[in-house]
Length: 360
Image (cartoon, rainbow, N blue to C red; front, side):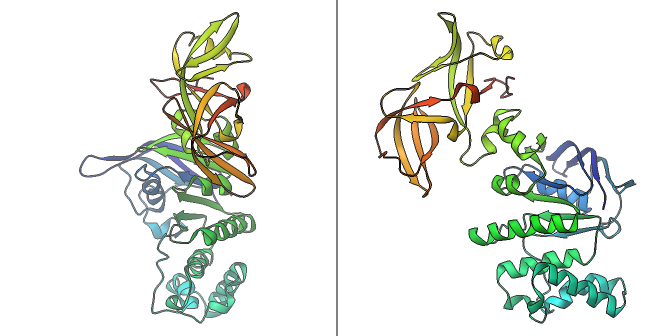
């Protein structure tokens, strides 16, 4: 296997649209790297440039020690799994998986050995004589993954491979691809718009927006230490809550005060002191605030109640802002109840109103 490096990679289309802007990243050997972001952020374009399916406007791409920027896809030693499976409908699953090996003129016995081993890993031995139309969506995706495995590439590329599957099957395939990565110990780059997939599958995650890389980090560091408001709001389900207030000092103590907001701080971080008397944005996770029917720092009104079984999501209105909290499943809360929130002071995040950057 091999590492993948992007050095100032940019993609500009003929109409002048800059889809990817000076991307710099390093995917380590045997790492599972996930590219995530909203539609149009440049994640699939980045993957397609690594694959050689899109030309690079500027910058360089390396796989291992080789500069592959101008190499054809077939010369990059990569295998790609697409969203739409891209199986040949007239061929059996065996022939679909064996196709690339036949093109290389491998011996029949070697082809059979590789296909059967890949089918065994994926649990699809019984499907090899069927054609794609006889398979379910999950089975087709396994065949597409098997077609990639038989090539034994240096790098696997996945472009939203689970988007066409139903919710239950997505969870199952998510686990299977993660298990496959552990088994093959291969370098994998995976593109998704689903941050839950990113958090559960990636060793590290690249968060992108409008062609720019916002942050590259482990899932937990992205969750607990986002570099800006976008990452904070994108990573996490439900996402982080945000309210506005001014940092003030009263009676020797610091607090955040705004419309319907008064949050005392046990201790103001040093970086925050420069924001004294300035308005800023305060973020907290749904699990980082207690719900109180009597009193608290944030006065709220219940908007929606979503029972999930072991837990319940309560959507609230706080001074015009929408806020979600996660509470035990037996919480007795109803629509339009007036309640209060008490965010944990040591689990607050602070963001500059103008730049959106985290104040740390």
